[in-house]
Image 1 (cartoon, rainbow, N blue to C red):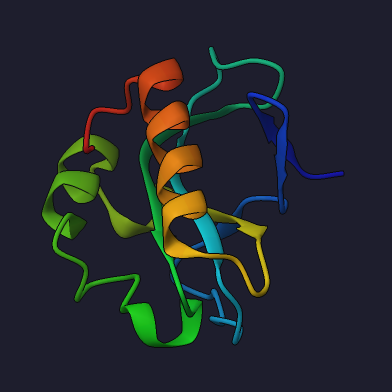
Image 2: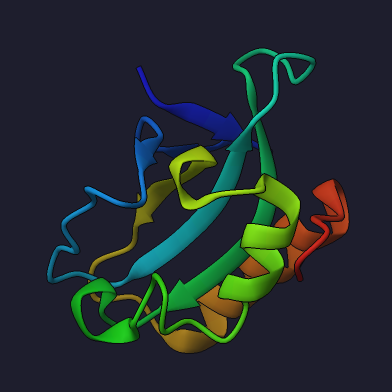
Length: 109
């Protein structure tokens, strides 16, 4: 099913603690469970882009991890969803990332 952010269909949210990073480029969103969010109960905290999810360091080593924890209270409440953009250019990924940041105003961007 996935999760739709401004017409971009991301993968279903997965707990960040069990997530396995694939070898691909694209966008990612870090979310927190929030029952008031619609249509799915996940509120975006951070949108990011990467040339390779596997080498990006998304998790405890990420520069915004402390903000994510502050918002979510604990890692168990953090989820990640991906929008795959294989062979994409950084400029295109950054443009979509900025569009999503402007639309959702996530607290950790």
